[in-house]
Length: 513
Image (cartoon, rainbow, N blue to C red; front, side):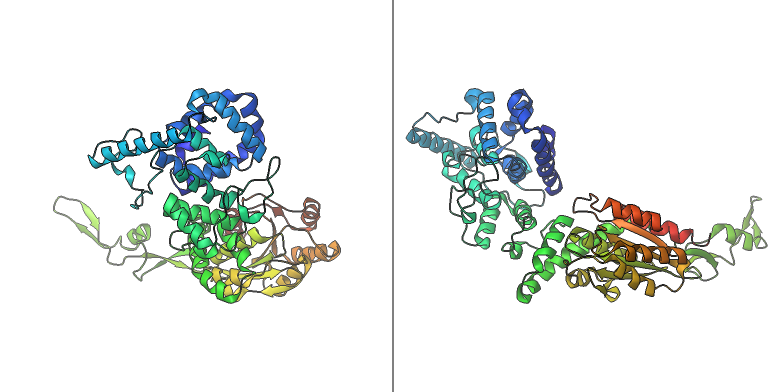
């Protein structure tokens, strides 16, 4: 846990901190109470961080600890208090007036050091006052954050004991995480966040407060997390130029966009376009190397490609010249070049994609993968979307943004209908690939589905069943149905887009054998 905190210096590592911490605490949080010594490295890291470094990590830390119930976080806060002893004064026995005087004196002292350009104890030096992207860092609370303040903030507990300026951070994160779930929750209604302060009147005001407290990068991370949690009111606050593209965010935006009026949807198009373009580019970088070699190099006298050295030497052995030092060299009067030509016959790839209600994440992956595969010269890529009906979206396959905005996820599942439509597109079975992306929860009699599979397999079509993947890449499908499909002639596997591209490449390269 301490290492994850150390490494969380950017958007990706902060997201990883959130996920890893949440996963660990889900399973191991009782250990932190029964064996509190396990907390010591984390306590040291949290205390050692500067205020700015801590605040950069605060939303990720709060999100990780949010998997615990409010009562579990209260117990953990008590354990922390016992472990740190007098360094974490949860009782606050000093009178509030005296605490205010101490804080004011600290602020005056800090201001005097800053005015004289002297280093402030416990603060980063040099360029640490600016973020890696050059943007200025928001100012942390003037009086600094004590260990007690930090643990109350990251556990989302006892905000009433925080100083006023630190309470702003608690309120901003309560807007996202609320009071929590499970044991110890206080049901004060959805509009009250964590129950300590009134929620922000508008999403714009909340976004502005996040900007002021955390800066642009962390603000975008928090807003994106809210979108992934299902909040439609903050969609307009995501900056297409600053947001960090992720499959989870794109899936959430597309899911929420389905219920929006056209006027709001039009404002979302730049955001969706940026996410789709960036994710498609990333996917293409991974997938295209797996598809190299699907065209054949042929020698040519026309300049344009790399020179074919071996054939150039053989073609010019008659054109030699003896140099003054006695060496003989070949003069390439007739150079030969490489070219890239199509194979004798194109291949047809038919992606049959289940768009029923449980397939949201897989639909996004399928659309992006289809856009990448559509750029391969030897493949004619088709995209069939089906639930209980089949829609041919092949005309949009090279524009994943248009494709994703056209697809409406929902409804039942009729895989046999999708395969029947795919069968109508087959002209040369031995050079046709039909890949079904589904959770295989067939809503109609299995006899029809198994019959379609046997017909296609018997004709020589290359079949593949791709098990649905959720937004974290975990396979989700009906194993009993998949086993029957395998027996009928359709191999079923849980493949990433890269693995699917490799499988397609292997079939095309081996098609003549």
